[in-house]
Length: 143
View 1 (tube, rainbow, N blue to C red):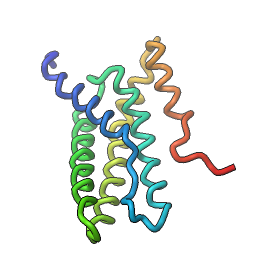
View 2: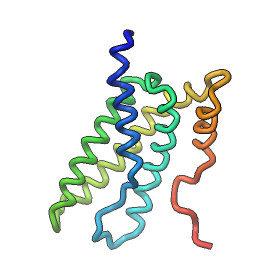
View 3: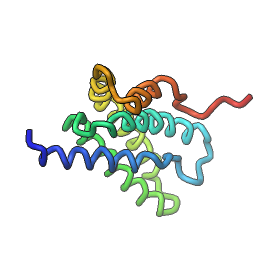
View 4: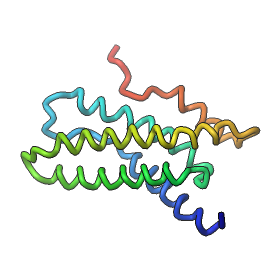
């Protein structure tokens, strides 16, 4: 595989990382706070995985890249839905987005795991790999 064919993959991983760095919350009129909490958990996990892939973006498989593209597309659709008021499709769009987050986590996990198993990784990569299991995925419980 040539160096030039890897560039779009690296750019997509970095783009997806920037997109998912912004927390995803349910729409502003959310009457059930569980929805926004539920939606931030997959987002947090995917952010941790993408933090690992940033150290070697070419390690992301085409399937991982495709799932991130699909996630970005769904995020854009949801954002468009949120601009409309009282849109009945909003709940469906939120469910699809959460599903896309979960799919991206599942599809990108093997790439992340393989990168984390690299012998003698750079310190920053090792720290990102350690964070995969050490940072809580959701909001901290109230004291």
